[in-house]
Amino acid sequence: MSTTMDRPPGQGAPTREQITEAIRPVQEPEIGRGLVELKMVPEIAVDGRDVALTVELLTPLAPYKERLEDELRAALTTIPDLGTVTIGWRTRVRASGGGKADAQPLKGIKNTIAVASGKGGVGKSTVAANLAVTLARAGAAVGLLDADVYGPSMPLMMGQTSKPLVRDGKIVPVEAHGVKVMSIGFLLDPEKALIWRGPMVAQLITQFLNDVVWGELDYLVIDLPPGTGDVQLTLVQKIPISGAVIVTTPQAVALADAVKGLRMFQEVKTSILGIVENMSGFVCPCCNETTDIFGSGGGKRTAEQYEVPLLGQIPIEPAVRAGGDEGRPVVVGHPESATAGAFAHLAERVAARLAKDAATAPRKAMIRLMPTRG
Image (cartoon, rainbow, N blue to C red; front, side, top):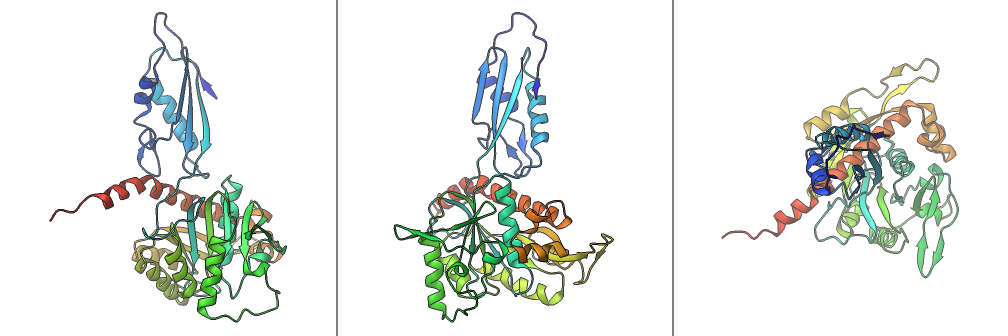
């Protein structure tokens, strides 16, 4: 789409400086800072009276793109005698800068998202799988690490049972639905129980972090085991976790354990991206009515109480169970379903939160580097 304006004679061509100043007031809606300030307009081309802008979005899921285009075009009307305005779009996810300052970042991985729960049975792995696939389908480079070593479910849920290749002593993750996936489930007999003590589990997680060829990733989604044990502590000590997503159901017994998980991440100085209320109502496949079989509103109340965002309320429907059993997450098998829409909203919120953290990361670094006055 382009905009052409009448040209009175005798006007000189606009300069890049004029264009930059004209669009300076336009802000990124989620962050509340200007596109120019955030360096989101890396290219401005002028050809006579015609102007071409390249806007670099910070997230692959930006529902406000049309709004930004309208605001940019409106801002450019302040320049007289402008010709055709062309706006091109691309996405460059930035590293959030979250996590412990002394943890060693994983090479090539911009953001690490820990998906956690205080107890089992709340659908944490379902959330992790659908979050990863949604981000990948939006165009991001995504990895999925199944860190639930005692109950690995990603091979089944992602529909992939192939053993990963080993090249030059490094493990090449399996790919499924556009996501790079690694799980102990790819390496073990599916009927064999893993009977390991904590130190061996910690060593395995370290190997998955250091000896897997993840390549360049925008997001690495980590499906944690339930609780607050060795795996969680190993991760926060080894790598900077960009943020944690806490999964719960609306019922009180799940919420009580979710709070414990939330508190754990707060104690180890890990950012809480927010709470996901999973199984937030059963959607009847016959009449599409919703029944609150696990109660309602618990996730929202907990998010408000602990002053963290409520990232989403995910309904439960038969397609979710079928997708998990068949290796086709619901966002792939039933993309038009209410549950898939809720997962899309969740991914949008997570990506936006990380983009906002990335935008403020330089400011945080400057604050840390400022000398104290004695």
